[in-house]
Image 1 (cartoon, rainbow, N blue to C red):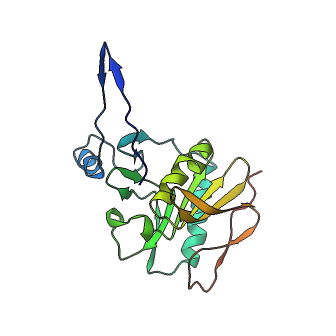
Image 2: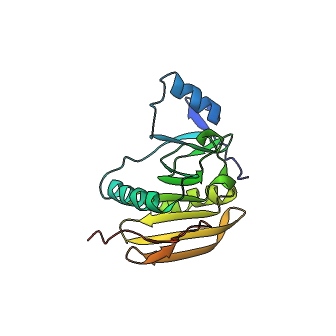
Length: 196
């Protein structure tokens, strides 16, 4: 488990440590209408973080990936777009795409249940390859892919050990890659056409 950093906020002359939220707090705030339903916030070690808005080509790549994955992945697996995944009591991430068994409710999915987590990055590449990769690794997500929209590169992470992945392979968007899901009749994916 990753250590929680204790931030101190100074108000006037007094120091305050903000309260750490839990996934249950986020669900309650969403149900009460305090937070908007759907994509918008992640919970990182108890701190609510606003997510960046999604625009083209980010949206276009996600749509292409969903179309291709839905044609390849068996029906006993769910291909979820921006699900709220509770990796721990104080960490909830919303990957752009997550693949996990259909018989598990999304609120019950934990890191080890995720067969593949995908992030599409344009303005968030450093965060997705840094902090977010460490969170996924620390919580046992076996395969984590980051699509770098600007450089048209795919970073495929596998083999989580502690807060890192022991294997990282980088390929171009024009390359065909193997899906890390056993038992597929077609196990490769031509990522996305060039964006230029």
